[in-house]
Length: 322
Image (cartoon, rainbow, N blue to C red; front, top):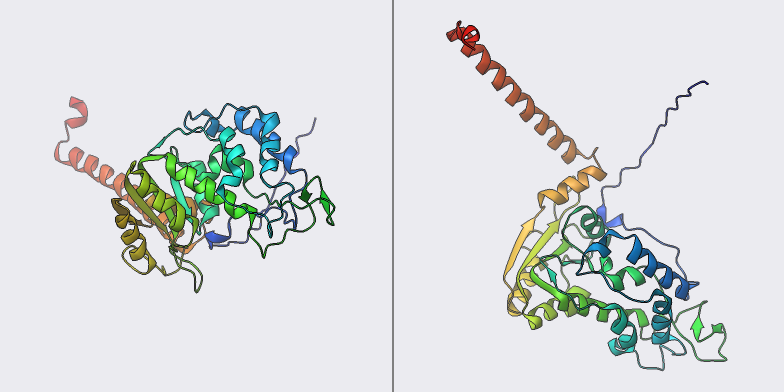
């Protein structure tokens, strides 16, 4: 039998803007098709295969056959323009999926940097984002809206064609509830990751974001988090737009202290830089870091060789004695 060798050449487009990393699923104008089946399937996948479910603080023992139906009941047959939608709309769902167990030194909040925060939590042991929890995992990247019976495109109280986004969004109420629950379960040291290289007219911290308006106040209200560590991440090969103690990050620290939290701010933590360089090794900053590390290794090897040479020169009988 002949052995065939294959040469595979990968031509990579290097995009150093980590804010573009997030996976973009199919976009649906209406409710995600088969949403109930998707939720039941995700439930089984999380319980049986996802490593996060091995964490007692994240595991939820629930009948996966009912999860999709519980969620659908929260919005089906409701018109977002005429019916009331708030966090309480999802009581039935959260009563099933929330385990109310503390995340001790493990909660990682994020604002404006979803894709990279998820990459970070996947490789960093012991930190979890909202989307790593059971409820966040189930609903992540889905869209949904209800409708009144006998209205166009309404099937079993669900509109799969078009959601009216000019009215009260059912998803906003859900993520508000999920964010609040996540913050309620945080304990000890918590982390928040922000983007220090945002686009024009966008800031690293915004008090109207889910973190600013819900999670941060909830951390203060619960009084279970004694330290909030701010992780500021920058794009590679670009001058940072906002650093610790500058711009909107001053407001973040001020708001956190107002809620009674102790705060530390860290610019470009080394593990975030290593992750960026793993993604984009050809970036100038990463090449320099690699070269510097190589020079350090060779300098240590050279030092050892010189030391050995000096010993043998000064003590010619050393080798025999050994």
